[in-house]
Image (cartoon, rainbow, N blue to C red; front, side, top):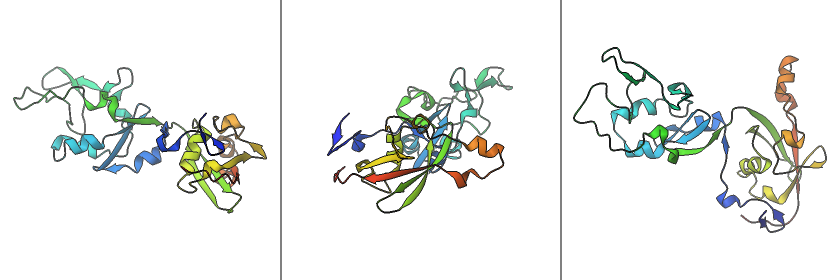
Length: 228
């Protein structure tokens, strides 16, 4: 494990997130900042939107910016769903929102350029991470400043990934010891693996407001002056 000052941990300057929540994807909902998710992964289609700016075939994609479009795909083939075209009787891509980029036209056309390589939905270049299938809230309390923040995190995220989410609130978060109920947390583990149970379903069953019982992680400053 690399070290920064006295604190072991990943190099956050080059840290790559593995998971993104649906709420995070939803924030990227403009042509100049266009994300979508499908089949459990998150894709940044901003370069695609810039390349085809002004193209009418981009419109159906812009309309779903920030959304999950898994229903466009056949989960078995991971390709766009297909159907029998009533006009031609041929098997074609099903595009109820209208034909979009890299989908062939219904009938042969001389202006159809098929030299783009892989269609965008088969191109791993746009992939930025996985979509968190389940999320939960966690409170983080800085015992030095008494500041408290509530974060929505994916249940499969490690504590390092949660720390990375917290950096905008505290750039020196890695210079703190992270504890729950008096015990040091293993930063390579998830919340659940650290014994911080997700009790949302129990609260729902009991008809209780789970937001009033969000677990709290306490941060204790180590005074090592870590720099990023």
